[in-house]
Length: 259
Image (cartoon, rainbow, N blue to C red; front, side):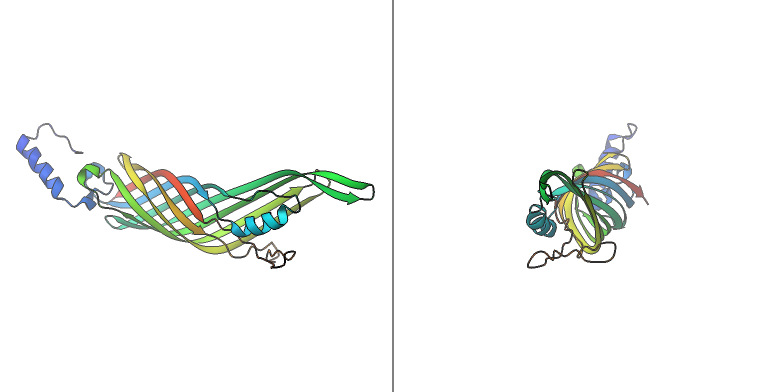
């Protein structure tokens, strides 16, 4: 029990406990001292996720990058960071806005043979690929009802709809002999589902941890001139996009303000 008053008699304390047990569990949704309702919720956090990247990895890396000895491994996953704010329209239901940043990279050190007038020349290759995405999200979060003994730890279910903007840069350096650099970007829609636990640690401050699945991606990537990235050298001429979809784990801190 959050309230301690040693001057209260035994009967009064029993009555107080009974009254608390009769209050619906929704009223304990992260409220200081067990009273009041959370009105606003602010969160910051981070984690790690797997990325699908099937277009980039299977078409470009596997069929082109490895053949040209410029890339050998694709982007499999990476870190993510997010921040958001929500408003409780019901004691256990919040709507809000959020911003998520995702990143992934791959590099390659290898050798490439070119033919010159003097004969074959072996060049050391240093390649780097960096991809990132910013997603503007409309978020929904629901806290499952909890019995009073568990009111400081709550299970939540979450979801979001997002507008995603992804970018990728590719830099290939042929040991100072020559270099290539490419930049692409595109927009796309997305959504996510998540579940986790949130626990009060002190007053309005809480920690949370969870897992989920996101489906964040872009349309076909374009360069600065608006030209789509299409692998014309392949027979099926596949377009390349960024697909940050996959399972993820997250954790962070939150602050609640009350009515």
